[in-house]
Length: 179
Image 1 (cartoon, helix red, strand yellow):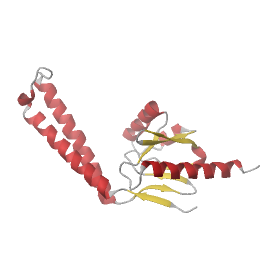
Image 2 (tube, rainbow, N blue to C red):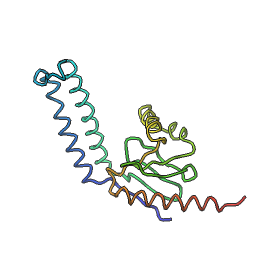
Image 3 (cartoon, rainbow, N blue to C red):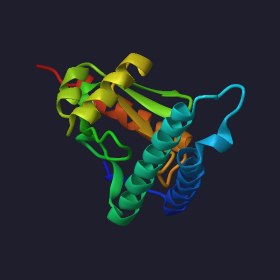
Image 4 (cartoon, rainbow, N blue to C red):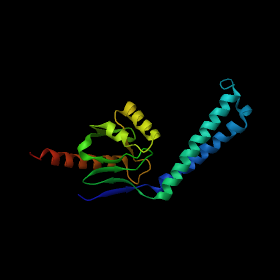
């Protein structure tokens, strides 16, 4: 099999950075001037300031992550004979071996990779935060491993087709082995 590599789309990253900067900027006035935002629904100045601070920190952090991702310019997703090497999103799962994969399916804008031993991948998480995100993915989607094409230089349907074809190929290779 040829090794297939997918890089991040610079265009998608730039648009995401611009969007995050706009949102980050939009939350600054909430924190600095909360009295201007008092309304019948939001009367508490402290609440408005907290929302402003959380929004600023969240979108500011995402902006920094996207800027770092842009300057890393690494391969985000690799598909080869060993499996799928995923570094496409915040939760870097590393190599997902073909023999661990049970099913590949799509849910909205994500490709879900069901594995027979999800704990193995949760334990491989680089940080407690990544492990938390993987556990959250398991609760929401039934698997800790999700692949998004939102920042990849590839269409979701094309990526899903490639992953499913390679999975079927390696799954049939595995079933042809006799002991």
